[in-house]
Image: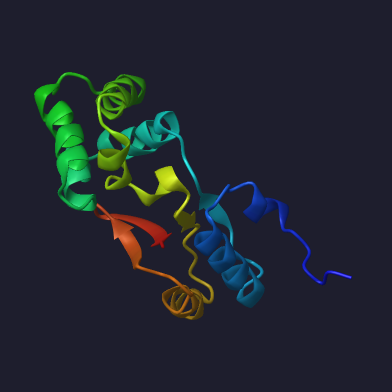
Length: 156
């Protein structure tokens, strides 16, 4: 008999092997943890980025490691100062992503490959949860803030 019981919330994140194991590790240690994002397609990634860009036009360069993909996305934002609606920004960013190679996109966000998840920030037990996240097997980066916004992002 297999003692492993799948967690529908984690399974719905569509994570890669390492990130998925880490999500289970985190949820076992802290059952109250809520995941807010896992693997994203390009359209979902563009929408997620746009929701932040509408509040801070420099959010991309303040959040992402500088590479061809992040620079191209930030350039679109800079070149289109009148495009302020979330749907317009998302459409523009998606057009940029569609023009990039898979290799370039792989350097933009680990969400695109299923190698990252976001966790709902909390105040209760925050230090213990963050300590567990920082100790997760395979973790390469943990961000508590992205572009000045409170977001708990773990990538593998």
